[in-house]
Image (cartoon, rainbow, N blue to C red; front, side):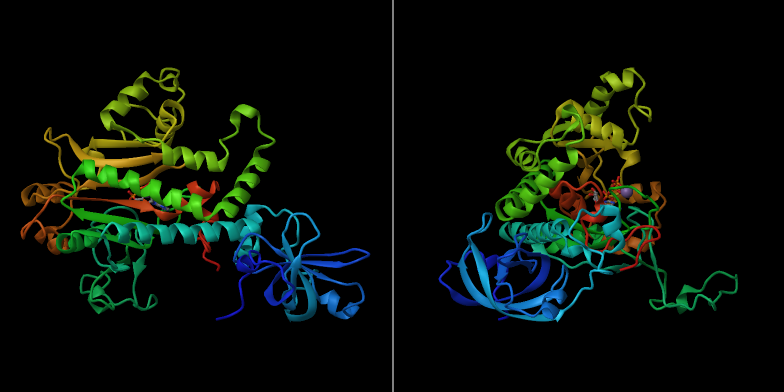
Length: 478
Ligand code: ATP
Ligand code: MN
C-alpha cells in the first residue's frame, strides 16, 4: 500500500534494484560531476540522497526542483560513494508534483527561530526539529496506550462537552448554540440557558477525572487520553489552552499504589521513546548542545539522552508536603530572602519552590504527598489528622508539576462535607456522589499533561512547540 517509506529504503541492501521515492526536497546541490537531491518524506529524520548526471535533465525541470518542492523520483538503489549514508538513488526519472517558489517559500535551508516557525505552523512539520518532535510525540502516545493495555486498563472515552463545572481545575470555555446577538432572557433578565442546545449551560471539559471515576467503579482500571481545555490566561511556557491529558483511575489503589504506578508509568514510556526514537533524540540532543554552546559550562544542562536515562534509572524522591516545607525553610534562598513568594506551612508551592526541591536539593524527580486540604481539590481523601489530603504531585526538573493525583475520598459523608465546604451545589454532581452510595471502594488516580511529558522528552523549552497547532491566548490561527 503506497510507496515504500524512505526510512525502510535506507535499510535496504543496494543491489541496483528499481525504487520509487516520493517526498519533499530538503536541499539541491549541483557540482561539476553530479546533481544531489536530498529528499525527505517525514518517515525518518534522515534524508535519502538522489543523484543525477549533469545534462540528464533539462535546465527548466531542474529549476523547479527547489527546497520544499515535492517529487516522485524513479531510479536504482546503489551503494553510496559519499560519506554519511550507506545507500543512494541513481535517478532515472523525476516527476514534480508541486513546486515551491524559493522567492516566497519561507522554509529555506538555514536556521529559523522557533518564534518564526510558530507563525508558520502549517509548514513547520517539514523542518527537522518539528519532524523529530512529532514522531516522538506519536511514539509516546503509542507507548502510553500500550502501557495501559499491557497492564489491564481499559481506554474510557470521557465527554469533551460537560455541564458540570465542579472540577474547579481551571477556567472553562463556554459551549453554546445561542445567537449571541439575540440572547434569550428569563423574566429576571438573565440569559435563558433552557433555550440553549443542551437546555443548560455547557462547557469544554477541563478534566475527564470525575467521569473516569465512574468507569473505575465498574471496570476497576481505566484511563482516559483526550483533549482538555482551560481558558486560563496564563502566558507561560508550560500552559496551553488546549492540551491532552492522560488520566488513569483505579479501584482498590491507595496512595502508595498510585505513586508506584505513576513512577513506573513515566519511566516505562520514556524508556520506550529512548529505544524507538534514537535518531530523533540524537538530533534534538545535538541541537540543544549547539544552542547551549554560548552558555558557561556550569549553566549547561545534561545531554538530553543522559537526562532521560537518569530519570529512568533512578528512584524518584518521595516526601510529604510538610517535609518539603521544612527543607524550604532551611534552604539558602529562603534564608537569604531570594524566593519571590513566602514559604510556610499551608502555602501553595510556587514553581520557584518546586524547582528548588527538584533541581537544587534532590536533583531528581520528586513526588510530594499529603498536601493541606485547603489548597487541594474537594475529591481528595482526607488523612486521619483531618488537616492534609492524600494528594501526590510528581515534579520534574525543568518542568515543575508533570503529574497531579490523589487517592479519592470514598466516604459519602466526608465527600459531601467537602462539597459543601468548597461551595459546590451537590445537585450538579449527584451522579458523582452516588458512586459513594452504591458499592463505594477505595480508589485513586492521576492526571499527566501529555505536552509536559513531550516537553521533557524532547528537551524543548516552550510547550507551544511540542503540539502541532498550539492554542493559547490570542492564537488559534491554524
Ligand atoms: P499547574 O499548577 O501547572 O497549572 P494544575 O495544578 O492546574 O497545573 P492539574 O489540574 O492537576 O494541573 O492537571 C493535571 C496535569 O495537567 C498537570 O500536572 C499538568 O501536567 C497538566 N496541565 C495542567 N494545566 C495545563 C495547561 N494549561 N497546559 C498544559 N498542561 C497542563
Ligand atoms: Mn493550572
